[in-house]
View 1 (tube, rainbow, N blue to C red):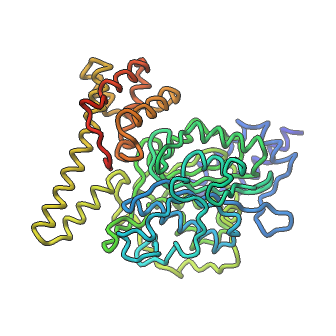
View 2 (cartoon, rainbow, N blue to C red; view 1 turned 180 degrees about the vertical axis):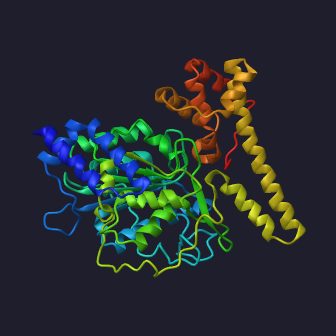
View 3 (cartoon, rainbow, N blue to C red; view 1 turned 30 degrees about the vertical axis):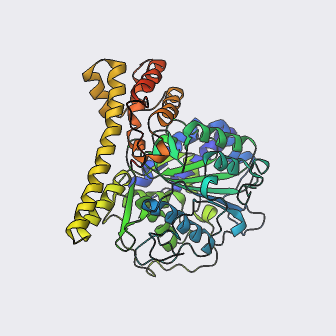
Length: 475
């Protein structure tokens, strides 16, 4: 009987698949996933009979959301702008404010460099996405520990912190998580620390085991964000994830604004929100949105992970839908690809644009000096990593390989210890964001079977205060 029901399910999947190549590829991915997790999914799909429904139907699940911008500083304007925009999308779609938890440093709306105080925009000539925002956790309260407590529903652990609000979703509810910031292999950045992949996976597994959600969807905007989930996220936790990039590449910033002197958005984030604003989310599936965003985001390789069966559900099941009318032609979107730059290049690109906009010799000289100083500090960081690598390998050829290759991260225990030590002894990562771009070197050291204790000892020597300048602001 079980085999018969499984066969019927597969036939139904085939019948619903579109004829284009992309849909066929996804169909076979569905088949592979279905067979692989046969036992678990059989129970979920047929015995429990969980239907794909959205908030508003009788007895339907509630939609909950957690929105996080993990950076600070005006040059990182775009991250908070993305999250503010996501908040507006969800509210306009009818998600209750009490069901949305927001974490954002909140230092750009009234920043001295912001020419429009109290206003944040996410696209050229855009609306104020800061208006009406309810921010639950700000400043130093935006950290990995509090984020994981929010997800796990640990109200006791957040008593007296920010609003203290946590997810109160139940076993039938739908949870939408949107995280935006810098990333590196196996980690996501916060203003003063980092969230490692295994810590996130442990929390998601704990949420699943405690029946804290029915289905969960995550949209992650960060460099190398695919490394948070590739070969880590099981396909039987009712979780579907899309990321801005694969495990080895940048995500991209977009919409440089001359008046503000910074970038307003990120390509992947802008793409999914523009799609949500122009499509009928009652009809569009998560996979359709993923496919559109992947096709239009030509700057990086948008990825999907987890339970791909959830991709068949409607976007409205996680972003709600409200009573808004849908008019695909009601807004002319500016393509975010036109001026897109790798996220790690943003600080230098801002200075280069400033160089093109100033006129006096003094202004030109000042900007050129800032560029040289930033490049010098970046090179010092790279040279320190190279020195550490050469000291542990005693081989210039192997050192060059470790400094350039991009190996797959598998030794998480070694890597996490090296990252924490490098941040503590050499360059504080949250104060030197360029370091995130170079952490692949630590991955390579761990994956090259070099003794971890030797590497840690070498860091102590190479980064000793007597001969190691303590730079900050290497961005």
